[in-house]
Amino acid sequence: MTVTIKYFGSIAEKTGTKEEAVTLDGEEYDLEALKQRCFSKYGFSEMESVKTAVNQSIESSGMLKDGDEVAFLPPFAGG
Image (cartoon, rainbow, N blue to C red):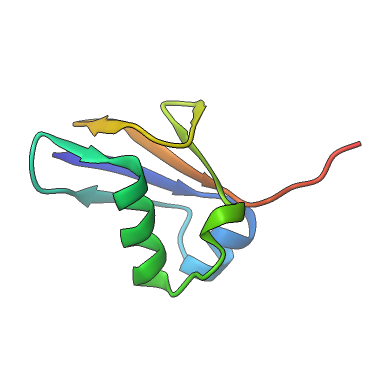
């Protein structure tokens, strides 16, 4: 299965890329496992503060499917 991962803001700066395709084993893959895999790969330590979106919908957990788009969003403040 292949998913597209998009990195935004400071996360994109740390990875050196804004987007990458990742091949995962199996027909389904857990979002939290993917987050851990990517953050380990790039040496991130602040996983809790990063929001995730799957197919442009904010999600914190769940199973991924082939062709999904996952976005890692840095913390942001609003007012």
